[in-house]
Structures are given as C-alpha cells and as structure tokens.
Image 1: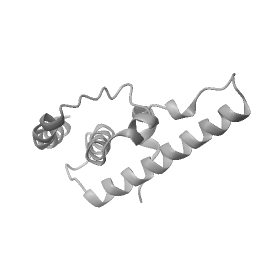
Image 2: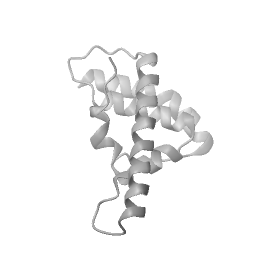
Image 3: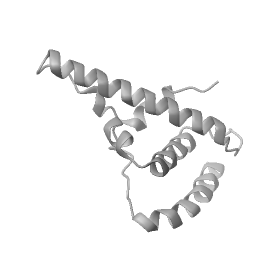
Image 4: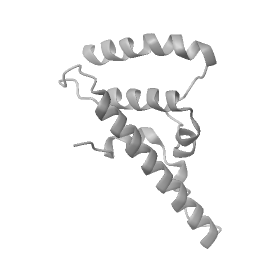
Length: 116
C-alpha cells in the first residue's frame, strides 16, 4: 500500500503541473469508453498510468514500464473502439432492451487487459 501511494504521488506531481494548464478533473468512477476515446492523448495516457497503478498488487515492485503502459493504452483504445462499434450496431438493429456497452466503465474493465 505504501508503494502504491509513493508511485501515485510520483506520477501525480508532474501531472499536476501539466494538468493545471488545462485544469481537467476526471472522476474515475464514471469514465466510460466514450469518455476515454474523447480525451486528448496526454489525458488518456495519464488515465492508463493511473489504472495500471490502481490494479497493481501491494507486493508488486514499484516499476513503471512505459512500453507496457503504451501497449495497454493501445489495447484499451482498441477495446473501447470495439465496444462503441458494437453499441452502434446494436442501436441500429434494436432500439431497446440492451445495455449500451460503450458506456462500460473503464475502472471495472481495465484489469482484463493483459500485456505479455
């Protein structure tokens, strides 16, 4: 738990400086695939870093592998684009009765994205 706080603190410091330029606040409990796709690249990358740290085990070493983060960001983008496309097709074929998968929350689905 201490390492997670240290990592998040280290990541938050530079992001706070960058974030103050455009003062964007993101409630991670409500971010959807539509939101993620709509973010600027820097914001999306910051979100992926946050998600990666959030899903780290307490015993994991405090290492940031930017290549793995980049791959996770790319996979998350593909995942979200697929969900948005599926939702669009579902809306065209059926107008009611099915949940909109493009509104899938990132916080609950990020851990399913694996990078080998």
